[in-house]
Length: 247
Image 1 (spheres, helix red, strand yellow):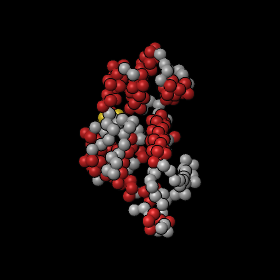
Image 2 (image 1 turned 180 degrees about the horizontal axis):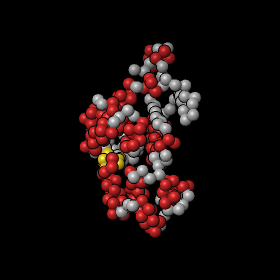
Image 3 (image 1 turned 30 degrees about the horizontal axis):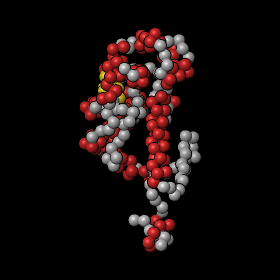
Image 4 (image 1 turned 60 degrees about the vertical axis):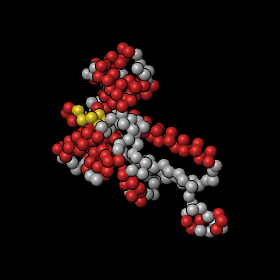
């Protein structure tokens, strides 16, 4: 079994049980920084793994089962499931909260949802294969790290409709940045740049996964929007000679 799958399964199990890096560090008598480094570098002995499992009351067989299931995680929902989520704002909120790796208690604390409502929506997401709703309302996310909404699907269409709201900001606050760069590039260069954009999006997701172990009040919702296309404002395009105007 590949080590990285086992470590990712361990991280998921810690999250599902609500065990932070700080709490794990205390249980195994290590510094929090050492725990973070150990898990990020995937560098620890079998004895240390056994110590972690015992401290968290996790069976190795369960961890292996979760690890083997990694390849079965979904990378996207069906269009029908996305439509179902979009049609119900509360279901949408719970789905995004699950993606943000929030616990049941955190969801009902942050949003105006009763426990019964939240459980109902979690059960819907469980049936979709999006999560596994476990005993004591623990949530195990069942999406791959490559998970994405359907291109031009119901959820992406919703985000496009809300894009004006996204840009109603001067992007001058902490954790905010807006960059607009215009360039004339060859097809080869733009393809390379798109690959870099995809790498950046993956890094954003990795940071999200790592920070999921931090206390809830230390984390804040951020949305990263990456886009590039052949485009210039219509007033500029209208000044081109007719033969050079793009469609």
